[in-house]
Image (cartoon, rainbow, N blue to C red; front, side):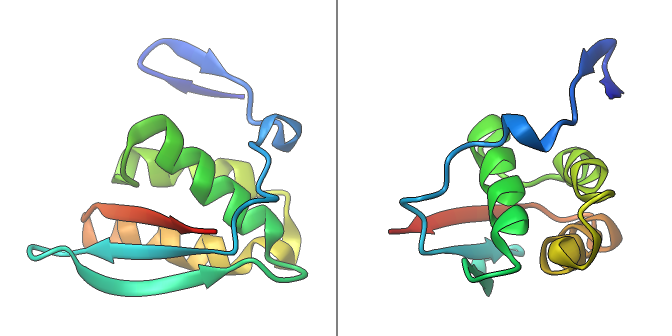
Length: 104
């Protein structure tokens, strides 16, 4: 569990949203909301897609605060979480926000 502003939230990956309809996530950031990259749903990356999708649904964007929550969720994902972990660590390092567009 993680605590955010006095609220305890479960970090169980069993509560992640269904991503059957998601083909890939497009990521935009920086001062001009430029294309930063994409995360394609493929075998071994489903957990990363699900975590980033959940953060986008919950917060509207992936902020440094959301990135910390996502990293906590991916902490036990092993190599399956590497793609998402790299994206979230970049958000923390740069202190920027990422907008997420879902491609079906």
